[in-house]
Image 1: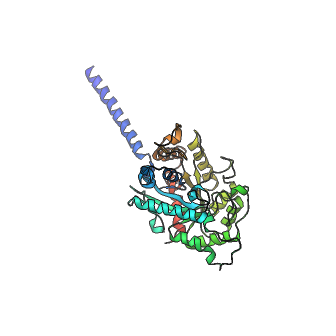
Image 2: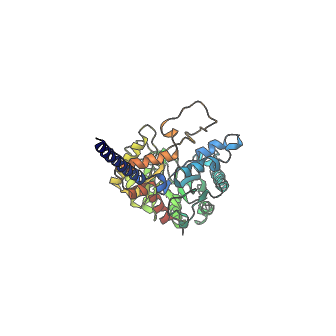
Image 3: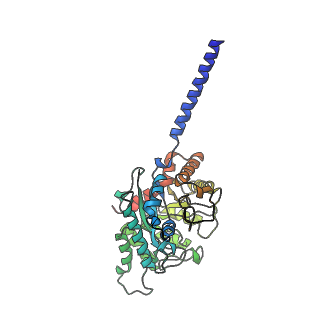
Length: 374
């Protein structure tokens, strides 16, 4: 009896050890955000604005003290961030387009300097990461709408001088621009004028051509559908929608219709899907990924934004200062949990590691590498 018990015990222990070894190997094989070069296609400056509005000096280095540490902990290597634009939030609350964008750009440049190298700018192809960043995050500066560079309605400038403001933003480190926000500007019409809206203006065409020449990423989020199709017709480089979902998964004027998706893909560009509010947020996003993979291919999919995290759970809310609201779901999680959940769900749907790497950052990097100056 004793020998039989010992043998059974030995076999049971062996089986347990083997199962534990296999499980540990499976866990080791599971991919995490830090295993990929994660690129976030669009991070609004809501949090920076919200913290700067407080009189408490402890909030007045928001990038160094609050945002950058969470981006690093979350495994993000590159973040595309508006350095001004057409919307009030993106130009720092001022009604003056050019002045507001310059103020926001200065804020970001000063804030990045404060991080002592934990955040840095991407300006050229050589700046792009070739492996996941460790202990730092890189910022790609964008303008959310071209109102800041527009000219007088009936300009008599020499054609070269019409684009002077665009070149000045480029010299200051801005490497991308969305042509419009929701409203109309002198480049074209946003979705507020109706989903189909108008095509680009003559000035808008000149801007696209100059962005191609300089090496700037052309963004079409918020632009009318006809504006997107027009941009795809005339660009020489890939274009991107950094933060839009697709119809029919959401049915608002902001979302991309199939014709827009195909036009963006035809340039070699990327559609960056973004957080959909609700309990099934990431399921819906992965449904979108599957649909895009089937219709235009994995190489044209990116991620714009996966939602507010517990360090900044909602627009207008600053932890420790704001009161009267409880957060749950995505907003109560960390950035790391957001990306880990999303990656795991892609794995569960059968996407391979190489494909996941393209979706969470590789495709945006490919386009940046093709567009940016050497």
